[in-house]
Length: 555
Image (cartoon, rainbow, N blue to C red):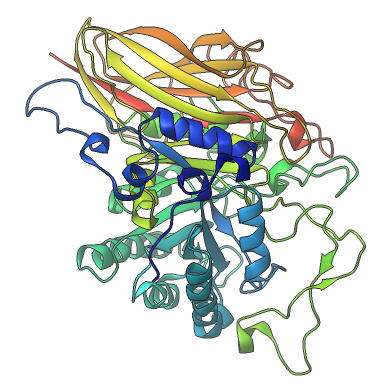
């Protein structure tokens, strides 16, 4: 692989005059963090976190820059997609992504042909555009469940790892998923999924690959990812199975007049089937402000996992197959050829006429921001694993920095995904530094953040019922109206450590569509709500979410 180059906005040899508004804004944030130029490229003592004293309290986190990415992008190497590899990579660069994962669907054609063919394109693209981090991945059909993103760090064995994994553990190829002949053998299928995650962990431990990560995709779209399965995958290898999509792709599915009167954002248009977990209510199959019910419900499934005191990261992405209002159609197959024989669709053809679609280009609408101390593939993966993650839709924010610190300390405190150790009764403060949008988004709208919500939940440890999806002691504890604020500002929210350990996470929106949360006004008085079918303009209902910070109370 060629030497990685800094993105233009972090490269001091690139004049600010050559940057767009987003690049200028990001350069300012990087400079403010003391990470500009070589300090970002190589890392330095100034960006390394000192270890907390053994047995002591507190914690410290490094200066961070946030890289924008998308871990769920499809190309002609997926049987149901449309665009060439180059079309997707150019779109990602156009909309400001720093990293992306080509996450192709598993099937016979992909395993035997497409994965290797795409790998050659990825190697070429990495050499020609070293400013964009391009990962190769796989959309794994999980035995007994839905889909996951699996992706590895670049290296000599990355495509071999993905192909071996696909052939040995993919539920679609084995007949272990919904609609397959072997779907009814739930116990066997769930056990095979756990073995798959453990196998990936062993490949990392043995040095076969430098790193590999797994994230569950659109977990509540079909309701077949049960709470106990999510916990089982996490517990099998928490350093590998790190989280789930907090919001699915297909965010353009319900633009009025586009797909029809029953369309819902994310294409969450399903009802329970025989394979769905019976404990989910019917409302779980909807999106709320474009976010999956598991994430959007304060005190719901995501919070029930965080309340165990263990990190479980959320992301958002495009899941791009077919872009809204696009004019390209799939190309025609030569006589006698199929995807199973080739592993690659024919190149698309431009018709000059809008074609059906639900998706946005990578980075056009959905963005996952990952905090790193340097620029590179393994740095992105380390940031994801550490949970230094926040997400936004519609380019709602330019920047977000979150710190929790003890009032008596002068340090920088602990950031997203981290843990702060405090004593009972100790006073601590949550610092939320917001940089508002400085430019119109791809829809031509200048986004305005209306409010920031602080969500707090008690940490009670492992649950006895592995299928619980509620965290009864989690709720919105503070809301700040920021509708008139512009530029960069810091909110200070006082917190007090009581008897129990806890976590805090953040959420906010443009304020256009709010209502009582799923579990009631006492839990969430103004949360995201479902839209009417067919009337879900995503640009008019945008949110940001952050990962939690844990506060461990010691005696």
